Length: 456
Image 1 (tube, rainbow, N blue to C red):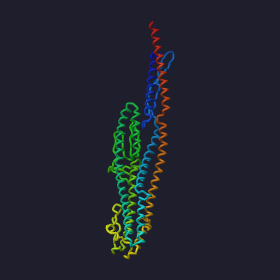
Image 2 (cartoon, rainbow, N blue to C red):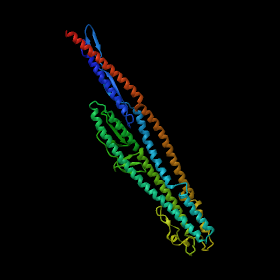
Image 3 (cartoon, rainbow, N blue to C red):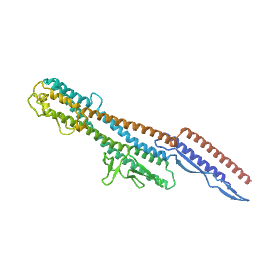
Image 4 (cartoon, helix red, strand yellow):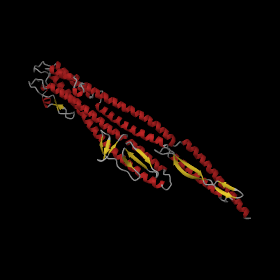
């Protein structure tokens, strides 16, 4: 025979189960806007039945119990999201870096290097037409000084942005290591609860969100363990394992996109860190091209100017000073001291403008050191290359963002809280709770009647 109070036990279990279901629903609704939250679902299962023996065996159910409260996630979509996210972050940083370099050049426009370079050659052309005119010589010096100043401005901004990128790399690595420590701490908490049979869903959400933020910074891969912990790798480096976190080294080589501790070399392929490395490499390339342009202008103009005889009757004077690169480009001291030291011809005659004409022609003269391109063509190619690179990474970023948005929508359809669904569940569990309470009331009344009958 079933126990007299078996029905009360069934009703009590139902009340506890539906109360738990309402709590889970309420928790979902409370976290509808919480970043990284995964909606939770209650798993209600039957309790083991009991078999009674009479004239023949009779098996009766004993109700239900809450087996677990689980997170609703799709691991495949999560993996795709992380991979797409760190690639998108790399492209975003590269696009930003190239956009910054474009802003430094300020091309096209009146403040660009092309404008000042062209104005300098125009001044030489005007001097060739008026070789005895001091005003024309003054214009040559003025436009050349403006060209030098623009070169210095670009060079200084390149150096400043290089320092900024170096600081950003160090800050990114520091942030990576801080997030790794956070993931390790969550691993410890999750393991201590998991081994007792609990489901630390909220802690797992926090850990997954931390890993997601980590992919903003660097490419990672993860491995799940039976104790609930995760191991996180960056290339060949174990960033987090079951026992702790291990800092990513801060010594880096942007050209190879690697970091090293002096013993092992770790390849960085994605995330903001890889983008910062790419930005440093791009900046170095455009710095080299600026140096090559300046070296060509300085060398060609000086070689010609040294052959001229100025109005003071002297020859063999350099027009530009400096040795290599854009950093030390300047007018020679003789040009600064006296505009009559500017040579316009090779004969020393006041009306000789042949040298000035030759220097003006440097703008169109092919230079083997520039790939047989003239300085104007070389610079135009540099700006064109920069624009193409910037557009390439910008288009790649837009494509990656579209993919990321699509994957995130798919993820949110699985893990996100749907208000309508939760409100429907709340109503369902409320009615179920009321039914279980009503069932308990009926059992209570029946038991009271039964006791009353036996008590007579």
